[in-house]
Length: 249
Ligand code: G
Ligand code: G
Ligand code: NA
Ligand code: MN
Image 1: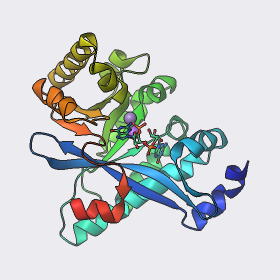
Image 2 (image 1 turned 180 degrees about the horizontal axis):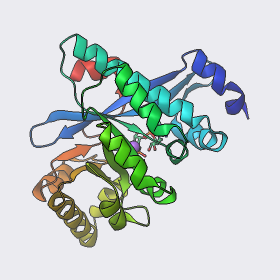
Image 3 (image 1 turned 90 degrees about the vertical axis):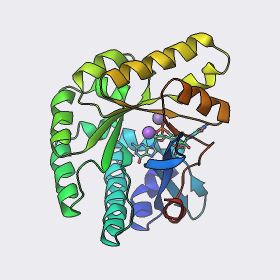
């Protein structure tokens, strides 16, 4: 209840902040991108994590404003780096399924990328399999986003019901293998085989693979041994504030 009462004023009072978790090329130990993740600095409560409020915002629709807030912050970040002649990498933003089915979604995607003159391929839309499979007309929406030069990726790949169908239906640039696979891979040969084949299949289709939840060096080693060079996880960095991210970029 408190959360719903506070959401609007929190946005006005700049209590929402975008954190960045870098994605690494594990072979070169270089940053190849980052994922934007929302945080709420509640002056009374302290920092609130997405698990405290995302579901509520999805129910009451406020997630649409949050997702566009994050997208706009990312645009401002990229624009200021470009203007300063500094290095930029693609940044991904999470897109709620509520958001995706909003009537003017694609139009707003176009407006924002033009407002900040963002070069092609610098912003990636991360969608869950569930979001993709639940939305009518998803192919059409994502083809339009693609035409605006957004990158498209599937988040938490392997946890939904229609992984393989998605590979065919959606213009995908990348998949992010869900971190539960990596957890299970520690003591399951079967899971390691699944990861290996998913990576091989994605690559054969020209789709990039990022593995989530890399916490241990032996997990990184395993991924590299099967040809998966890109990883995201606490081994490299947790999600960090923008200034910390700029420092390591
Ligand atoms: O940052 P953290 O790892 O706690 O995020 C947990 C989950 O919250 C993420 O997996 C993501 O699905 C969701 N999330 C984080 N930031 C955003 C956001 O800006 N928009 C949406 N829709 N979901 C987000
Ligand atoms: O749902 P999504 O995959 O978008 O969420 C990313 C979430 O995963 C964030 O909340 C982030 O804090 C968390 N996360 C990122 N890297 C790791 C990791 O290596 N281990 C664990 N346990 N969580 C991670
Ligand atoms: Na994500
Ligand atoms: Mn994920």
